Image 1 (cartoon, rainbow, N blue to C red):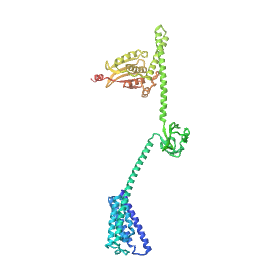
Image 2: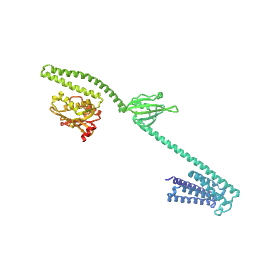
Image 3: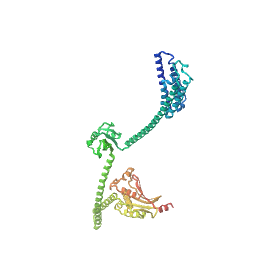
Length: 545
């Protein structure tokens, strides 16, 4: 319902109440006095008011657009002014006791329609009252002509005095009501602004409190909780928002008792470990107003993830220390292994040996080489080398490494065949030659371990778009998808010998060269590993042409 519709309903109800009160009073007086004609005008007046009420109700019901307008309010107030003047006419004229109703209408108009309404109704009341005074003085109309009522025409001074006093009174009341209405409107606007700002800051405060990562608790000077956020209650296992004791709740989870009287200006921090292994941090600080302590505020934070991160960091520090120690030990072990391998080689060639002695020396030499490879991979993984990129012929680098690999005792022992092919006789790329050979050597070693006796290992070089691809294939035992994922992790191996660092070292080297690695394998059919290196522009143009 629109604003003017609500006002119109209120005026109609107020008028009805006044009319009924007037009617009841008239009936009471009529019964007491017993004079039938004396109060007859008042019954007609009441009938007139009730008739107008019906008219206003019909307008309100039938004309929905008109009832929403300010004009409908003015129509009712002007009708009321005319009705009141008629009442004055039959109730004593200029000496009528009902003159206060004119002032009442001005007050109503000012309260509803502000300054403009008060002044307009005051002018209309003044005009109508002036017509009434002139009519009675000049004998244009007399009430006793219509009803039997006592009436004495006013003198000139009485008519003039009543007219001037009441017109000035109407105007003064209108101005006073206008000023009060203007002030009330301004105060209402200011109050609305204050309420709006209060609502904004309340919402902002609620938003800030709800956005805090942890919970907020406010206590009095004794530690009794006056306010707590749902997050704080959830973390501390409390179901009520206030009335509980913070110190007792902290002690319930094994925390220390808190003497709030001795809490210093600096916040007091408390750590709790809950039964569900959740770590909480509670920071308690004094709450002040005008430098006077009025309570305490506690911030509750969930430190579970932070505690896990600290534990992981401590573990990593220990692992780093262990790795440094292991690397140092690996260096110390590697040197004697070289001496053992060299001594075994010299013993094999120094004098005639029996078959068993040769076999034992071969085992010593072979195992020494294997352990040296394991230590090399471990040292490379724990202390990766920064690549020194230079332009090299990768075909030549690959051929040199394959010649060395073919002389490996393990390759000779298994009687493996090494097959090499390249799309071009010369392919120039920028790599670290030592790291490239290290990566390729590890792949060849894996292929050697997977291959059966008399098997074949294929190495091929080709260019596809912006990549130079080094492909190492074997026809060995192959791997399942789960095994491929498992051997990508350090210290995981699919072979009975070794510690599983070979492929991790290869992956790290490829990442240092901004390349990528792909593994294709089928169980019992073989494995293919592809290393992708960035190709030079010249090589790509040659292939395209």
